[in-house]
Amino acid sequence: MASRRTTPLKDYSLGTHHCSVEVRMEKLAMVPFFANLSEKELKKVNRKFSAHHFSAGEPIYYQNEKITRLRVVVHGAVQLVRHTLEGKDILLDMLQPGEYFGNPSAERRQTHEETAAAHTDACILSISMIDFRSLLENYSEVALSVLDITADRLRKSREHIRHLTTLPVKKRVAHILKMLCDKFGEGSRNGRLIQIPLTRKNLADMTGTSTETVSRAISDFQQQDIVETGRRWIAITDSRKLSEIADG
Amino acid sequence: MASRRTTPLKDYSLGTHHCSVEVRMEKLAMVPFFANLSEKELKKVNRKFSAHHFSAGEPIYYQNEKITRLRVVVHGAVQLVRHTLEGKDILLDMLQPGEYFGNPSAERRQTHEETAAAHTDACILSISMIDFRSLLENYSEVALSVLDITADRLRKSREHIRHLTTLPVKKRVAHILKMLCDKFGEGSRNGRLIQIPLTRKNLADMTGTSTETVSRAISDFQQQDIVETGRRWIAITDSRKLSEIADG
DNA sequence: CGGTCTGTTGAAGGATTTCAACACTCGTGG
DNA sequence: CCACGAGTGTTGAAATCCTTCAACAGACCG
Image (tube, rainbow over all chains, first blue to last red; front, side):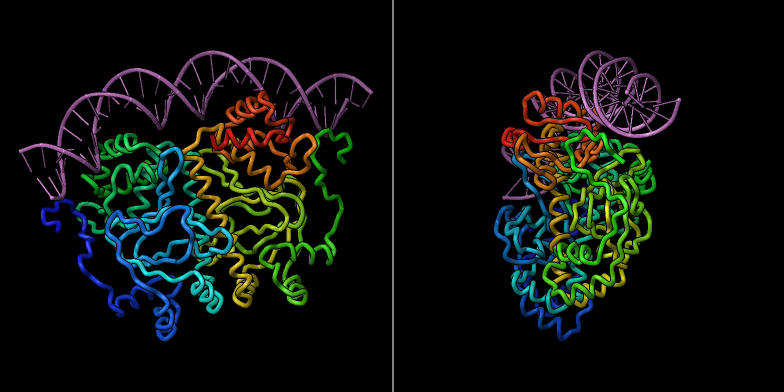
C-alpha cells in the first residue's frame, strides 16, 4: 500500500481493520445526540447499529435511492454531493467522525436528495429508519439534539446562499478555506493544514465555480503568502489576511 | 382605507380586527406540528401563546436580535430577509398562515440570523422559547413534526443552492414563479394568480439577481404569453411553458 | 518511465451587473 | 377631483466578472 506518499496529510487507509465493540461504543458516544445517554442505554442503542467499511471514492448511497437507514461517520471523511442534469456537481457537505447523514425525517420524501460517498477510506455505522424513529420517540433529548443539529445545518445552508448571491468568487473561496480550516485544520507550525485531500474540483463544487477560477484564486492567495498548497492538500499560513479577503 | 384598489389581489388589511379565542384555536390546530394534539391538549397549549398584529412592512424581529420567542403566522404573509453588508438583501422565505418562524432550537446561537417583517398586514401568535422547549420535551410527536419541517426547509434551501450555482437567471426566475404559484396560487380563469403583492425587488432578492434582470426575464415571459403582470401582482397563464423554461 | 489525474495559465466569449434615463401607477394632498 | 410625487417597472448600452476552450506542466502510481 501507499509507501511513497509525499503529501503532508495523514494516511486514512483502513487496511483490514475491523471496528471492535469498544471502538463502536466510544464512537457512538461521540455522536452529539447520543452524548447524554447513560452507558446502559448506549449499549442498547449500539445493538441496533451495524458497521460497514468503504474505500476512498466508494459510494455509500445514491441520489434518488430509497431512504432506508440513518448513518454515522466513525472513521474517515464522507462527502455529500448533489448531481445535476447540467453536469455540474455541488458538494453540499464534508462530514467528520461523529456526524450523521441520510435524512433523519424520512417520512414522506422517500428518496435521498444527494449521493454520499467515502471521501477517504471510511467506517460507517448505520441504523434502520424504523429503529431510529422509535429511538427519537423514546428519548426526547435525542430528538431535540437532532433537531438542533438539523437547524444548524439549515443555518449554514442559508449562510452559503448568502455567499453565493452576494460575494465574488475570490471571497467565496476564502470563506470556504476558513470554514475547512476550522473544521479540519490541524497543526500550527507551518500554518494549519486541512486534514482531508481536496482537489480544485472539490473546492469548485463547494463554491459554485469552475476549477480554473478556483485555481486562479488560490494562485493569488499563494503569491500573497496566505496559503501553501500542493497536489490535493492546502495549508493556511496567514488566517488573518484570509479573513480580511473573506470579509473585507 | 384603500377604496380605489386596482390590483386583482385580495385585501389583506386587518382593520381593528382582534383574534377571538375560537379563531386562535382553529389556527393553532392548522399548524402542522399541533395537528395531532387532542382538543384538550390544544387548549392547554393555546394558553401559552399570545397574539400580536403587524401592519404591512412592520418588522416583527430584527437580524442579530436575541431569540426569545417562537412565532406562528395566523393571518397574512411574513417575509424572512437576510440583510448583508454589501447592501444586497436575500429573501429567504415567504410564510403563510400555519407556518412557524424564529429558530426552534435557540440553545446556543442566541440571535436571529434574519429579519422577519409583516409582508402584508398580519396576525402572529408567539410562545416563549422556554415554554416551547418544554412542549417539545413533553410531546414527542410535536418534536418529530418540527424536525420534519426543519429537515424539509433544509432540503428546500439546498435546492435553492443548486439553482443558484447551476442555472442562468431566466430559469431561476421561472423556478421561483412556479414555487410561488404552488404555494400562493389562486383561481384558474385567467391563469393562477399569486396571492401576495410582490415587487421586482422581492423577486430579485429571491433569485439572487438585480431588479433589472428580473424585469427583463418577466418581460420576456409576458411576450411569450406565459405570465400576466402588473404593479405588484403576477399571474401564471401558461404553467406548462413555464415548466419547460425552468427545466428545459 | 509512461500514462493518467491534477493543477496552471492565457485568451476569447458570454451572461449579468451597473449606470442611466424614462414610463407608468397609485394614493395623497391641494 | 385633479395633479403631483414617490415608488415601481422598463429598456438600452457599457463595463465586468466569470466561464469556457485550449494548451501545457507537474505529480503520482503502477
